[in-house]
Image (tube, rainbow, N blue to C red; front, side):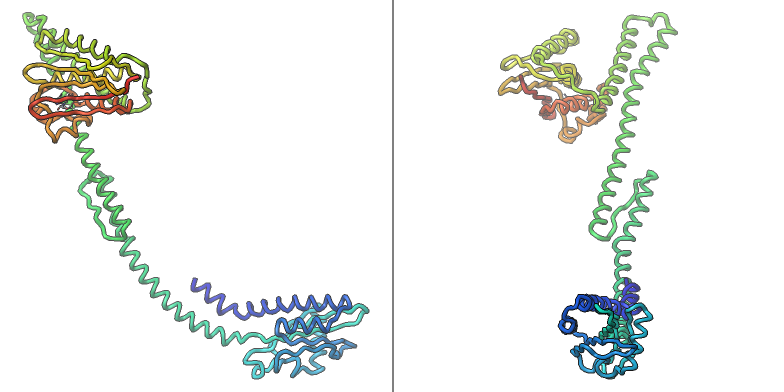
Amino acid sequence: MILLLWILQVAFLGSFYRSITIARLRTYAHTISDTIASDGDAELAIYDASEDCGVCMTLYRIEGSRGSTLVSSHVKNNCFIHTFLTTDEISRIYSGTLSSGGKLVTNLIGDTENTDGGESMVYSVLINGTEGEKYLLLFNTESYPVDATASMIRTQLSLITLLMLICAAMLAFLISKRITRPVAQLSAEAQRLATGDYDVHFSVSGIKEIEKLGETLGYAASELSKHERTQTERIANISHDLRTPLTLISGYSEVMRDIPEERTAENMQVVIDESARLTELVSDILDATRLDSDSELLGLSTFCLSDDVSDECLRYSHMLNAKGYTVTYELIGERAFVSADEKRIMRAFCNLVNNALSFTGEDKLVQIKQIVANGVCRTEVIDTGIGIGEDDLGMIWERYYRARDRKAKGVPGTGLGLSIFRKIMEQHGARYGVISTPGSGSTFWFELPTV
Ligand code: ADP
């Protein structure tokens, strides 16, 4: 920018001024020449133009190579054409104009003292009259004192340049301190993070946005490390859950292969049960993954949720009565019809019942309640187990999450049941939740609008 200013303001100042002035005079010359060519009042045209632009003008009629004054408009004192112009010079300007095709700028011929330090610039134009007569029109303007102006601008520009260089240096220093350095620091830390090193620090001091970016990156790093920890924990959990039935299956099978007396129905049942558990585990993992990819659309239909739930309770009762479990069903209100994906809702419901059966107390009691009122069917699964601690309450819906004390007790499970339940409820836009007091059991519930 500074260079551009130097070039425009110093190097080309004179030629700019000159070309602008000449362009202006050329339009006046054009008007006057038109007036003469159309036999109009040349005198009036010249006086008007002269007043208008503040330039002295003279119109000569040329005979031979000499010119006699026809109109003279003198608006500035000490102008060249009214003070110093001799007949010889008129002839010289005429022949110069003639040889340059009718238009000529003759400058730098003035007396610098008489023209306020500037130089006279004479612009001459040849005009042809209607009857073949020839005229020479002279404009006398003062060329601007370019050198003096340029030297003044140069001094100013030197000061501006110095000032701008100081400002630019300060700005560069500030930008480097507040932006470039912190960004480089952040990028170095981000590269370490990319290689899996989570011991990174994104706290930098710079402009507000960069500090915010640092905070966000720090948050992302901590989340990533948390995610990796949970991932490892999950894999360990799944491996552990898979290993238990596999160990039992292979152990029992080997014993039955080697010792014929051990080939009993009970031992075979253990192998069958453990295989079933394995299948359930794998199908849970598959279900959870499938539900995650939202591509599976809901197969909506209208069905009687009360009938389905009470049938399911009956089935549980038949299956588990012998083992001492009691599964009860109570309906408060009308039978409820809902519009939902029947298979998935029942899958979600069974997950709750399975958990209740696993975690219920000594009395082995699981109560199912349905309360139908105000267009909503609320289904509750109530157990009398040890309940869920406050710390665990927020986490139980997470995939592979299993409360620590439960895991320690060796209750079988995948940690997927409730995450599958939650996903199904979210897909239906249903409200759900749990009320639990440690020591006195839990109530898991969900609500669906009736139709
Ligand atoms: P899983 O039961 O296979 O471990 P879930 O996702 O179904 O996995 O449950 C997650 C955790 O929530 C369980 O490990 C358990 O700690 C807790 N939980 C679920 N249902 C109950 C319940 N009825 N009573 C007490 N704790 C429960």
